[in-house]
Length: 635
Ligand code: MSK
Image 1 (cartoon, protein in one colour):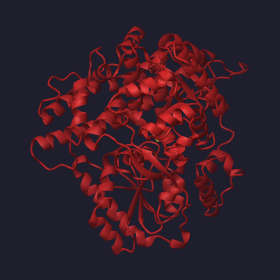
Image 2: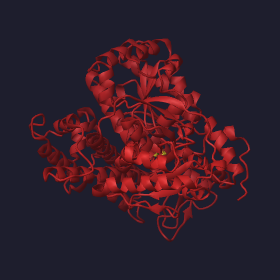
Image 3: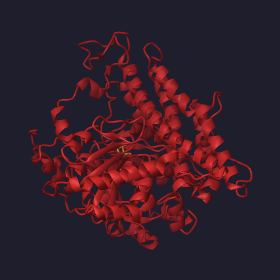
Image 4: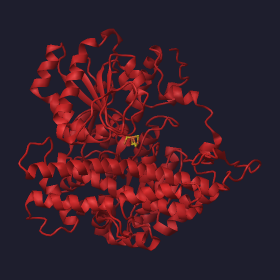
């Protein structure tokens, strides 16, 4: 297929490996996300403003922002309601994604308890007893430190399950366990305490149905409630994954397409849920699998990852990162991948098309996520080891079909130190937050910024992520983050000890003393919950509420509905959130004002939209200094 070349590839990505691979894909006639993005131009102006609606079959309707054409949809919906409904749709969509992920982990956790109690073999184990006891303690389970582990785990599972199935007006057990009093009071006053994860998504879908909620403030208030349900669904996923696979500790690896190997069987795991990918790594590292690989002429088996499954297996077992969202097709375009194994979320259906150009097998594994062109080998908790073995064998057997002449792997990769869970950060600090808090008070750490979120082909890949991080660390701001930002920062070398040299003098001394990079990899998307746990602890230690802290959140290249949900709950928790991509809300002045101004009066924080990373850094630094002054700290 002839592909129209991208005019200036450096305007699509700052990542050198990606630049090379986009050109390589063009040579091979492979279309990527960037080419499809160009074909899609100009994108619908109504859609970009949030002014189109397809929620019923009288539509689609669109509202004229210039008020020359229709100012209402066929049902009479106005611009404010139309835009607000779309925001709520995204939040509910994001919450459903995280909620399902967490629920799958909960089901596996319960099965693990059941099999262990019956003394039966099971692919999963309760690996991190210390973490389990700390979760139980937070949940207020009696004798959390001494109770037999399986009994305790069953009580934890029950408390968490209640947060899905509750039918009363009580709020989530996990919210009560993981939020600070000051925030809980704010949520209570606003009437946004979530009741159950399923119920808030259900109610959101009801409200946006034709002829239900038509008052934009009421719709968005439920958006906040649903986003909070999302927040604690993510907490469930993180916490239970830590129990099943161990709480991350600092670990070294590499990032970027150069982690693929010419002589190895390459398996790329992609998606979000580590339940199967961890098993694949275990099997691939076994002597039996390595021997099989050698028998087909490979040197060994190399598992690497894309997106948040990559983050999960990196921070727990050191698996290298092949790349973030916009790398998924490029990894396959190397021609060196025997199997791409996907679970769910952020997997572009286009990977099937790229795989088809080579010998690559695309393997889908989750019942909720099949892709035409993929082979479906379904994960089940009780069969996880066999499924992983089958997939690894499939990849090994596929190696001889690789056409060596078509393989090209860019020799580009960076070192990365990942695995900064809250527990690991505390350990680096000597077991207490005091050194961090004292450094913030002195101004050695001017502030802390969480940078998170996706890539988006609307902006150059990684540019916002990397430039914003560099600008902030040069100004003595410590960066923590997750998701595709974390992969961007890793690829750019910002998660190494060498990157300490990019930090301002005062921050650098702290980093050198603690032997940590200036950008701390805290995990996958769901691990944004770790950032919140850290913020709660800092606010508690200082005796203030979260909006009082010299902190900020940023999603420079936000793309998914999950990002909308995460951004909304960070704001609800009192953290200002910067967005580098303009969200589809500008069609309503009222909604835009509510999100970027009025929310501050309600929850103490708001959204800020600024595409230029340098200007965004200025806004963030100004906010941090304002908060420092209010706390009586030097600036
Ligand atoms: S993978 S949600 S593109 S961060 Fe978590 Fe990356 Fe965003 Fe997906």
